[in-house]
Length: 461
Image (cartoon, rainbow, N blue to C red):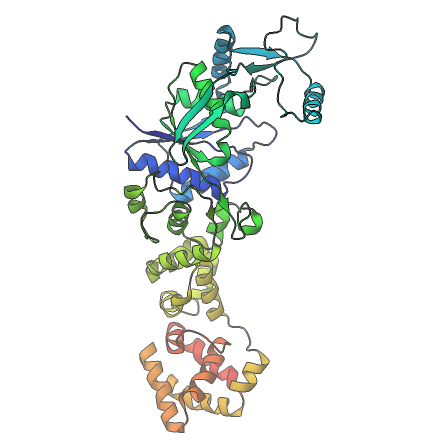
């Protein structure tokens, strides 16, 4: 069987983390089995769907590297097909027109609730011979089976059975001729020959309704797999306060797409104890048997750690090239006073985000004035005296490098007969404005010689 999966977002906002994980699982499953990954845009929510949201979804998938083989298909361009199959169900006696107003439906449900009954459509038009009310457009409803069960073997959750008594006659076509979610998705999945429907478990309740529709249309069922939701670290449903923002915000905050893909893959799926793995390894290993039945927990600190692991693998020159592409004005500014590749090498041990790389280069290019307490401790008379002794040695260096600068600082320590911090700390504060930095000789060696000497003279003067 040729595997076919799909990702079918609704363009009513940005691509959020749960949607990105669903897209990733479908992509990985198709790639694992040499199948086809389809992108479909379910844009029938006319009030909330926007072109900006469509583009946001495309941009996020491109950033994550989730390439699709077919599509994008748009539901609003397929209205004729939905109408065709709706009319088929009507001819076959498997659907009917219903004409209640919203007020009548609300009153129906209120009465059921007052009687302690489960609110649902009471099927009053299912076998009615009455003439439609004058001037009122109806909705097309499905004749759900009145008895029996719906059973499927979920690829994640295992066997699930739902009684047809629990299901009402869902609306297929709204009065405006636009299909509802449950009808549109079934028609699309039939027409696009989907073999596997992998989606969030908030759709479990839709699945028995959709299975009955497949059978009414005489179509084969796909395999269903429902992935548990993502929770915040506090156990509550993931929301903006947990970091459930636009996937592209993570790009802007300095995360690498490879790290995000790795983290999303591990969010509810595992391959042994592997934490850091490549996209190629994900494709080789991915299956649905190892998707957890329990909700996953979003851990922003673990994501940062993982991003740091990926950053370690990026060469210094590539980090700088990335900055030059993304922030050319920043790159020009720092390159005027330093060798940005050498400075990256000096500070990268602490980077977990691309933004931290940029911030470090900026801080070294334009250091802040040291805090009063730091200046008082390290740039007093003793500190300035140490700097006065350092300056001529640095001026005389023909080789402006970290080893040569380190040797000059040590020579000053020996000449003044003081301990190392008595020279190194004034030098660090004068050059960077900070009391704590990575190796100061490497930082000074990455800066231009005249820049370092100017900062020393200003600290002295």
